[in-house]
Image (tube, rainbow, N blue to C red):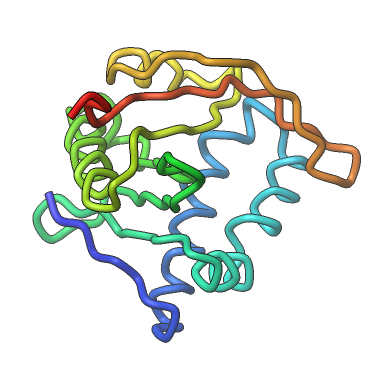
Length: 168
């Protein structure tokens, strides 16, 4: 599995990332939160401008490939003592093939390199991916309902996974 980081200066990669994100997120989340909210969230969080701003503010985005084909993407950034996992997506046909475990190992390694303690992320309470995060060793540490504007809310579980032993 390969991870190709996108750079703020590479406009083509940012456009490619936005296109990939829109395709994956639309397929996965339209049935969960509805097309109207998903369209709003895609524009706010996965448009070319949104990705560019996120990169300017410390996010790291990676295309994930298996051989010569791209199968998904991840994005994360340091938040306090943890790495915040903002994006963790695979194309539908790639789910359930063990790729999530390899992707998590990569993120854990990046978290350790940054000297951080663990990984935190928000997951919609109705997202089937909750089972995957459970299997990957994450634990629910709280529930949140966040107002994202335009009358929409994100109703999430917050998951956490410790990646380094704090006693060492």
